[in-house]
Length: 246
Image (cartoon, helix red, strand yellow):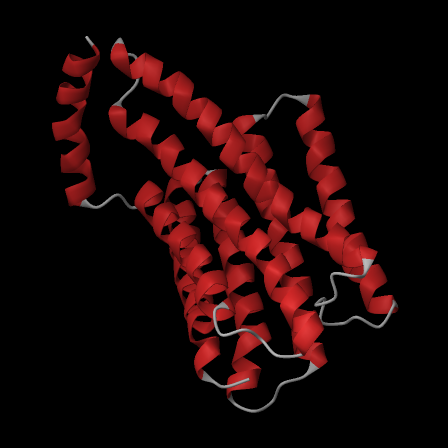
């Protein structure tokens, strides 16, 4: 595999680290859990991406790098599950069970696939691959679904002046974040299947798998650090939307 296909995923790793550190700094000033949980998730994800890809670029590729990347990413999924439950379903018992069950499935998939000799986790024919895949895909799909439900409810409240437009739109950004990451997870299935058949990474793999997290990270940045242009756009569009709906 040539070095150029690693570009997007290494870039995603660096951006993940940047977003994660920025969120952790924000959480220190606000004292709020969502920023802290997402910050931990992004820091772990950034380290995971670099463990997977950067050694290959500099010529130190090893199955142990990939395994370390898998473990670090799985650790980062734990705060993501805590985020999904605490933000959307704090007092619901099934949400706690879903969070615990997803985490157990994820780590069981990694552990048993490693014991079976698949340290890299690139083998879709292995049932443990699918357990790991479910473990890191469910949190993103969960956030996407919950955010869409919250957006629908918030949009109705905006019409009667009980919710600020920026709050409602924030749920839509959350949904986009979850959808982007979920799409990336499904793209991995196709990527790994082709690699298993040819032992060559397809050229389209890195741009697609790297682009989805980049889009998600960009949406998270807008949620917590909304630029002035974005705020002004919402302020201009809100009156027009309310008038059209009336």
